[in-house]
Image 1 (cartoon, rainbow, N blue to C red):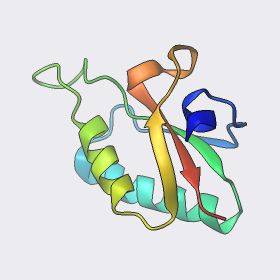
Image 2 (cartoon, rainbow, N blue to C red):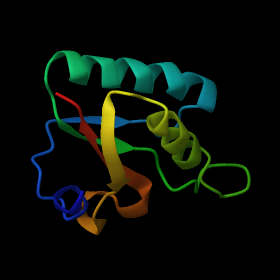
Image 3 (cartoon, helix red, strand yellow):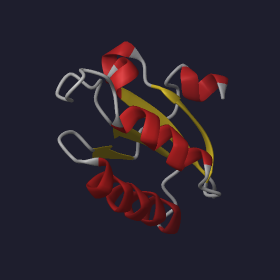
Length: 97
């Protein structure tokens, strides 16, 4: 987890969910994680945004993505990205082998 948090893994894939609704983002995220798991991609970055474009200017996708990843057995760990990789608008995800 410490290596993940420090950004010491090579990012093998990236998914940008900017502009998607919750209903659109869920299947896209699920398929992305499935493909990464299937093809052996261990560390990925998911960009969910900071919520600046939402009605209340609060992060909607961030909270949902966190919930979905907690329930996914293929996910070992995840944390907010470093500032140069998106900060609180993105996360690093470590996927099981």
